[in-house]
Image 1 (cartoon, helix red, strand yellow):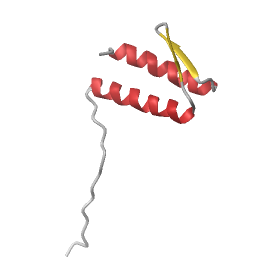
Image 2 (image 1 turned 90 degrees about the horizontal axis):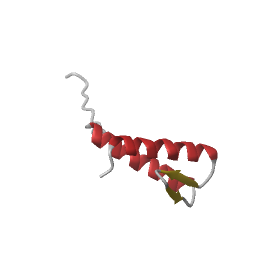
Image 3 (image 1 turned 45 degrees about the horizontal axis):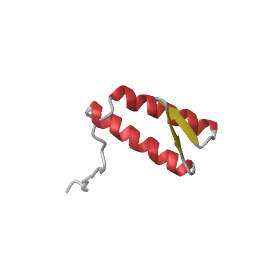
Image 4 (image 1 turned 180 degrees about the vertical axis):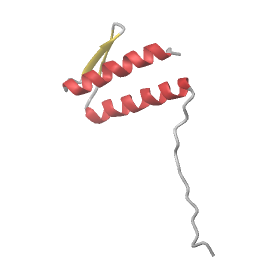
Length: 71
């Protein structure tokens, strides 16, 4: 399982790569090619979710509001 530092390094590399418009990123001596921006965005979301889990943050998936007119 990758460490928090490794995941953060991958995330930084992906964000920089996405901003540059190049569909290839290299980190830790490994190169990954992506087919398009949607695939890169999905990889960024996945890495961010892994980082959040390691930090103990659980994303809120649903909010419910219960209201009444007061009578």
